[in-house]
Structures are given as C-alpha cells and as structure tokens.
Length: 406
Image (cartoon, rainbow, N blue to C red; front, side, top):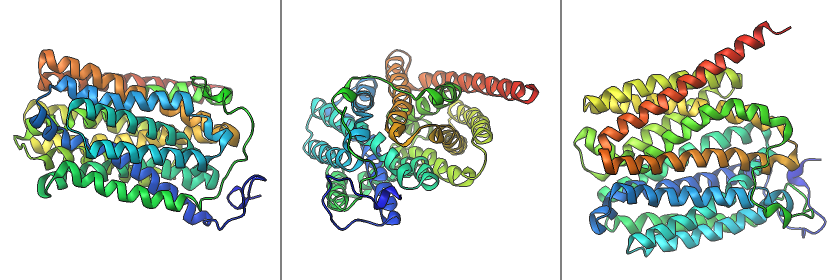
C-alpha cells in the first residue's frame, strides 16, 4: 500500500495532497526552516554595531541555536515515529512562528539568544520528522531533497537577509516579517498533508534523551562520521564568523559581503548534490572529501594573501566538496533503516552533525578573543583540512581492504 494514500484508523477522512504535492510542500518547509536559521547571520554585524558585543558573544548566540537544536534532536528525534509526521511538523511550525516574533522584537543580546534558542528547538523538532517523511513519500527523491533543500535554504536565507540589510529599510525587521508570512502559509497547507506512519504507543518513552542508531547502520555511520564532522564544523564557522571574516579579507564592510560568503558555500553545495546524486555514495563521499580539501587550500591562500578572488573561489570549491560529502554520507545511511526506524536514524545522524556545527564554532569564538579572527580562521581551517586528510586516508584504506578481501 502506498503510505501517502493511506489513513490511520484515528485519522478523519479529509482531502489530501498528492504524493508529488506532498514532496514539494515538505521540501518548501525544509527550505524555510534552514532559510530562517541562516537569515540572522548577515544581520549580526548590525546587531553588534547597535549593542556592542564581541566575537565570542556572537558565536554564543549562534551556538545557542545549535545546542537547542541538538537537545531537541536527542529528546524529540523519534517522536514522529510514534505520533506521526504531520503532528510533529505542525508543532515545530508553531514554535518557529514564536521564534520569529521574538526576532522581530529583539532589543538586546538576551532577546537574540532567546529567539535563537526557540528557533533551534523548532528546527531540531522538525528535522527528523521532515527527513523521515520525505523518505517515506519517495525514497529516491526524498533523499535528494534532504540533501539539497538545507543548502538552498541556507543560501536563500543568508543572501536574502544580506540584500535586505543592504537595501531595505528596517533590515532587522523586514526579513522576519516575510518569514512569518511564509510559515503561516505552510501551516495552512500542512493540514492537507497525508500521514505516512500509524500512531503507536511508546511516545513518552521515546522522549528519553538518547542517540539511537539502528544496529545495521552503526558501522556505516562511524565510517562517514569523520568527514561529516569536518563538513558541519566548516558550516558552523561560516554561519557564525564567516560574514565578519569575509569583510576582513575583502576590505568591504557591507552586509551583502557577509551573505555572499555563505551563499558561495551553500549554493555550490546544492549544485554539487544535483551533479553527484546518481553516482555511488562511497565514490561521492571520497570525491567530495578530496574536493573539500582542495578548496580549503585555496581558501587558506586567499585569507593569507587578503585575496577576495581566491577566498571566494576557495569557498565555492569547498561548497562543492561539502555538498558531495554530505550527499554521500546521507545516501550511505538512508537505506539502512526500516520505516519505523527512520526518525531515529535521521535524529542520530543530525545530532552528530549539529554537535559538529556548534562546538567548534564556540571554540573558534573563544580563540578569536585571544588571537583575533584572522589568525583563528587560519588555524581553524587548517585543523579541518587535517581532519579531512585523515578521513580520506582511512577511506582509501577501507577501500583497499575491501578490494583484496575474499
């Protein structure tokens, strides 16, 4: 039976979206959440100028989002396996609306931290539910959307917010008003989203914080984890300190420059995912890691030489490696869980991802207070490069052993 067209016994008959429309709606929600998550990044310079806080405070504001998201994944990651995807998505959309209202009225660092914490909670709550629902509806296209939509969302949010900050009045207000309207429309549409899993007992027990990876997926997870950690650590750095670094390297202090740096990373990631989606996941993972390493070398040269061209070229190459590596990691895992385990698997995978997104960014903020952002960026990216090279060596060794095994 097609899960998209089925109704649970407790679900009242109502008009439902088609499989194709459901896939597009879920993709738009995922794009919306990630756009909202990256929209504050180009605005941090405006907030810093108004309220006068340090680079460490900036990374704490960013990390608050990631830590709240991680906590939500650990507590609520499997909830949609028991209560259904649609109910969890609706709850997350409501929390996201509340966080945007806080952003709209933020007048201090404390208010900004509160808004980011609530936003992280909403995004963590929806991440595994959306990822599992997309795969429930269409395993092939759902995995593709799970890879591409976050990159597109982060790029749209960062670039859109920076354009508004550069050219629109009240830049810290307009972007959140627009996002509020988008999410209200999505809430109305979700009422017609078909449920893809049946409710079952155990929802309260599922709230115990844990990372529950299905047994058959654990070995593969440990194999992709080093590269995935490097990818998300890079993403956390660019989303928190990347806009400030771009202004230092280029000498251009406009808000648009910060958004352009994030967009260069994530839009090329999305393009790379589309290019590699039909290739074998392991080959994509190795190729993405090698591309990421090459991009880091170019980016480091751009930072060291204050070359805007090299910096943005290296960022774009890193983005291609990011997209390919993330797609290879995700596609290596999605087929290893049964339908009732997909929420848990996606929760565990993204829990590791967002831990890598947050902790290195906090450490980079601490280091920037002591050594300055320029020196911190060089050391941070060099450290990620080393991790990628070690991961590549391990993957080549595993491939060689697999080739000679009887």
